[in-house]
Image (tube, rainbow over all chains, first blue to last red):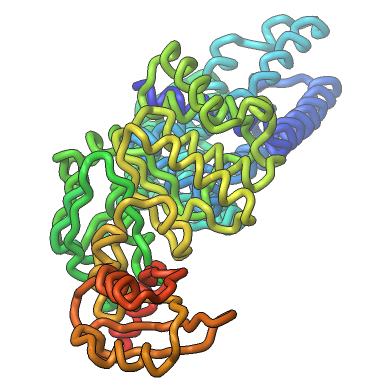
Length: 250
Length: 314
């Protein structure tokens, strides 16, 4: 356990002492602030029949953050260590491969979640300045955070996997982004293809992340979706572990 | 401490190292010598559990490096080639991180970090960012990292690579200091390096061990060509006659030196030491003798000899 915690601390530390960490945090804040302004403008003009959280998630900027931040956060995890050679000192220390993979994943996920923390201030602002206090429901807010966490976990694990495959951070980020975008766009098929009864549409509906997030932002935490995210995250972590172990059988 | 048997590593079809067999005893400083691409780093990576061998076994302190890697890793301090470090961390912070990673408790890691900082002369730069340090200091940080958990065995891969003469000397002294109570296995392609620090040498060439032994043993192996130099004040014909009558001398060469002295280079026939005989001869004839030495082969000679033999065989 001690090596794991030490490594998590190191991962977090490397995010917070590097310029790139603050660039990510600043970019996330900027984009979220922008979407907040958009939501507030929308609230201003006409009556609103959906929860604020849903309106908030349902714009491009939110997804831009979701899809862009994880590849940039995770691109350094393995690629940089391999590039600089510290991978060798790490892997010859008394730590197991699993500990390394989990620590890098946990560190990146914690950093990702910390970038979303200021989001908690937005509902408070809304509550302070809006007349209708029912606008912000704490259940919906909790659901939104659970959604962000699950989605983040999946995309961070995917980023770790992409990073473990290469020595080049840029390639790692590109791979992670393309893989992640592909996974995300699968959900769009539900909008494009005509819905007809049958298993195809059912499968598509189940993997649509936009649909998932819609539920989360309404405060609905569906076990099926939790299982979907957790199992995919586990899959990518498993693949990362195998890549890390692969130096033993190459 | 290290027992290696028939260790082989193949990359694709090419064997990087073939059938290595050697042992390193506790307390020894062993130099692992070879040209670039001879298989030094590959061997060290296998010993440090970074990658497995294709076949063969290696044991460190009695633990197998493949099946008991965790035990082995706890017992070794490994500094890879090029000494990679986290350049964004501060020296003390980095050493603490490494100590904790290697399983030391908070109090113990603090204590050990203090000790190795002192030992490696890092006191002045303890709070500096590693990326801003000079090569010599970085090398010391790498060494401090290898020492921080008090390993029984230190494996250093090219520790003085890319350092200038002065820094090389400092680092070499550091290695000598820390090797007092532990085993050191050090690789290098620099011969003087190994000659000055190591008690025993293993010469590897193209993935195969060519020669192994202490410096003295290697000297003896080369001794068929071990010349004796004598500077004697005597007429050349007398000298010529004396050497021709000495049965043990296979070949001699006389050249003039300063004054009335002549420099004689004498090659013995077998593994004999000519020096006592020459001294006796000079004494009985009343010749003045001002120098009598046996040429010692430098490691460089031995190395060139060993690797040339290989090339000739090919």
